Amino acid sequence: MAEVIILPEDYWVFDFTKGEDPNFECPFAYQIGRYDEVRPDMYTQELFEGNRDLHVGIDIGTPVGEPIYAFGPGVVHSMGVNDEPGSYGPTIIIQHELDGRPIWALYGHLSMESLQLVEVGGLIDEGQIFATVGDKSVNGGWAPHLHFQLSWDEPVENDMPGVVAQEDRDWALEKYPDPRIVLGPIY
Image (cartoon, rainbow, N blue to C red):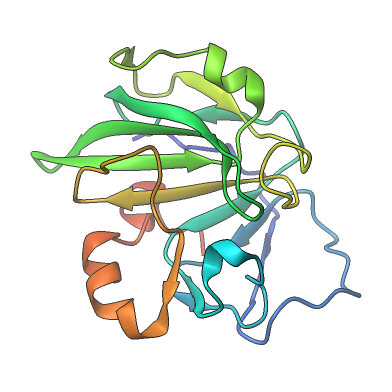
């Protein structure tokens, strides 16, 4: 499997379990936001309904424009812009196969130009650059990063809940498996 983002040797792994520290400035250009992490007070936008704070994807912080690679061969399932405040902005979902089963990967917080690089139904090769990381003005208002999330169930639209309520943890982790099954031990 190919890397989704080519990480340098040194990068930061965030711990958001106590919330985000507005006075902290990360000393690294690349960062990781963890899977299955409760992140209090980080998701205040209406989209999160006031109770969703369990992150079910992995965030990979990068400079704007960083290329994004397909971890394996696949087919573009859907694409579009999730433009609610706090959402993904430009988003592409690719159907891949893992251990003989279909699995869908959401690649969120992309650049607008990414939506011109692929088409729904288009074939994607392992390691193919098919998108780039977007900036805060298009990606839902977040610092530049890729939200990478897997789903065993086919999405009905070009979206997946990247953050769920804590009481939904059991079903969410079953449906949205740990992305490290394809990313490897990045933390």
